[in-house]
Amino acid sequence: MDKNKNNIFFKIFVGLVIFSLVFMGFVSSFRLAKREYNVFPRASDYLLGDLNKAKVVVIEYSDFECPACRSFFPIVRSLKAKYKDEVVFIYRHFPLIEIHPKALIAAQAAEAAGKQGKFWEMHDLLFEKQDEWKNAPNPKEFFLSYAKDLNLDLEKFEKDFENQEIKEKILNERNEALKLGLQGTPSFFVNKRLVILTGYDSLEREIEKELANQK
Image (cartoon, rainbow, N blue to C red):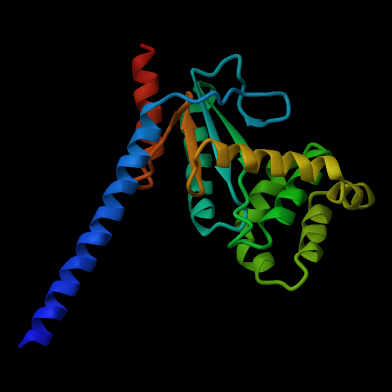
């Protein structure tokens, strides 16, 4: 009987600990979302849209190897199509290198393509074909094939792929995400406010709020 009571008390204790951790995480996320961040567009950003026309700026910190980021990729595209010039989207790198060992070199591939004006095209291919390259022992072979499909100069692509400046840009954006307190990917800012993703419609709701505030 005592043993059964001990098991019950232990289960209750574990349950309370788990609840407390989840609650504290929610409160922490809520506090992060309430404040404004100094996340302004900059010259090195890749943009979908025109900053001079947009009413809302969405900045995404993302990881090409992240399954959740891949899930949000078509949502971002559909939102851009829906809101057209009213919203501009900006992509920044936040490779979770501890759990996604190929995210960093995938980001290098996107940046190398960007040197030839094809960042977004490579961005799309990396997400669309994520299962292909992330399971490959040498994903660079796939990146080269994507570059070929995009009619890039392959010699320049390979050179830029190893460019230290590109690697530093990616790691600087990753460090920036960590300093901002971001806890995962994708993380979105809508006009400098962090969005707490509770579903696939979270981003659209926040965009609608910002547009409504400007009417």
